[in-house]
Length: 325
Image 1 (spheres, helix red, strand yellow):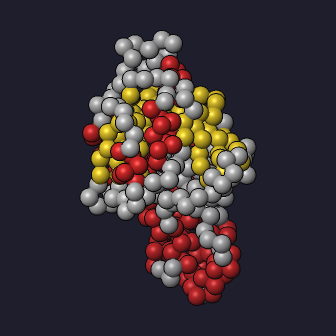
Image 2 (image 1 turned 90 degrees about the vertical axis):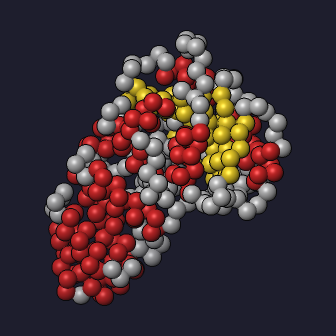
Image 3 (image 1 turned 60 degrees about the horizontal axis):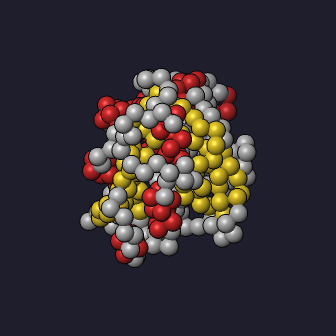
């Protein structure tokens, strides 16, 4: 392994009410074969015994910080970045587990990659929380710059799989704290404008599924899409911008905000002309209530905020704004 000076890696773990899972997550980091690391647990105002479970672990590399009020995932990760001392930053989720050589492999690849590679990410396995059995995987490499500028949907490296140079975060800025969903996508867009990603074609993260997960609601996803659209409309592909506008419009139709729906349908025409979208626009103009009834029937299970994406290697549905995993 060729690693100059063995740089310090700061691993940031935001947590909210994970007393039953947090120790497993922390130990999977502390037990890495790469030892020069610090673990910053950012407790986002938990109301259970999370603090006690964290402090039971005796390791000088472990640091615990508590938010007095809930900051959400972006605010908690940003706090961790600001408090970190490492040259490299990695993120872990409080309910997931790392394979013990994850950091070693990522650092080795990063320091043997061209200078414009700022991030290394890896594959992942999906594990059923009840049975402990593997229920899916993702080993798909994505050219994120090409995806954002030429693709049809947002594909994003899952946060707990990435390791990134801290000076790159200082340059492009941290997570956008206005976003309570898709904050990982928005950061990846900014990073991809200047830097490349390297991929390890191995599942080095075990992602827990089928338990109470901290997923954003539909409103959070839509508000995030609006912010991402405005921030990056001159960078993202026309197909992605069209999809954004349509999903936002559909949400507002279902929530009786026909003015906002009309606004985003008209914006969608800037990126792609589609006959059924034109019919949607006329329907919204002439008979908004009937249009809503139709969409209530069409989207009775909820708007597919991830554009219906599923892993090609898994039967696990993907959260909105995340990569095919």
